Length: 204
Ligand SMILES: [Zn+2]
Image 1 (spheres, helix red, strand yellow):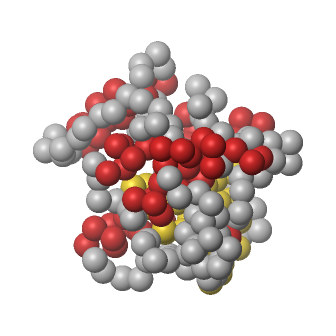
Image 2 (cartoon, helix red, strand yellow; image 1 turned 120 degrees about the vertical axis):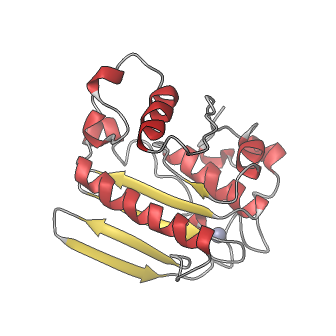
């Protein structure tokens, strides 16, 4: 109930249903011809390759830093296009990770320490900010599928609705990036938990 303000696929009448089932029902109502494959499972190091390999483009709509970094790392190691997005309070960010281009860890080496940053539940999210970031992510995905335009690769889109400010900043590959550089220490998804656990940011 607390995040219905930013969930365009759900309404109060869906409370009690599984999110994945309610989402399928809503999307089918919009377009009965749409082909959907619902998966009711958490993305974890043990299944991320199988989940991501089934698709041409992956869009990150998760809400935990650890999962976002896992998706980034898997995208790099699998060579899979990933549209990263994150939202907190009034703002958020989008960047697209493509093979050979900078990744999330080139910009942010590790997830923030839990005590440094508030979670969505603690800080809250303005529903409209989610709309801004989600729409930019959708544009990125459509561009990738159609092979048109210029993706947000090596560039990060950042939106601050409270200040009314939006900016795009270019960034390069980090020659010491722990996942996409020649010195990568995260290089094997089957040993992911061991390779990424230096700061305890591990999904199990
Ligand atoms: Zn990188």
